[in-house]
Amino acid sequence: MALAHAARCPLAQMRKAPEGQYCPFEVDYVRVRFASWLDELGRTLDTLEASERSTIANLVYIDLQEQRCLAILSKVRIPTM
Image 1 (cartoon, one colour):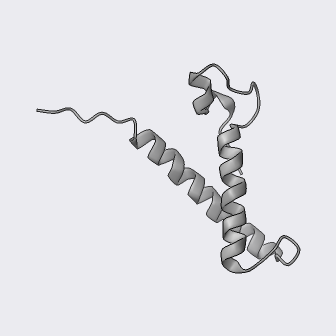
Image 2 (cartoon, one colour):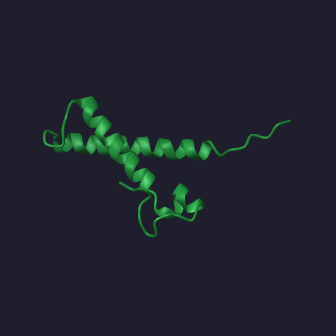
């Protein structure tokens, strides 16, 4: 799963981005979403089938992309007339 490198991390704007590492915010978000999907399906890491793991990973990737889009859209300025 592709996570944003520090250059795209919000911490980069504060000059506190981890050099050459994944964005800590996105890493945490992925962990939380994966756990949430596990809980919703009533599964644990021990009872998870390979096909379910793949499906959850895809769902988490979609969740992450949605968050990235929302972050971009939240910065859009709509001109007033």
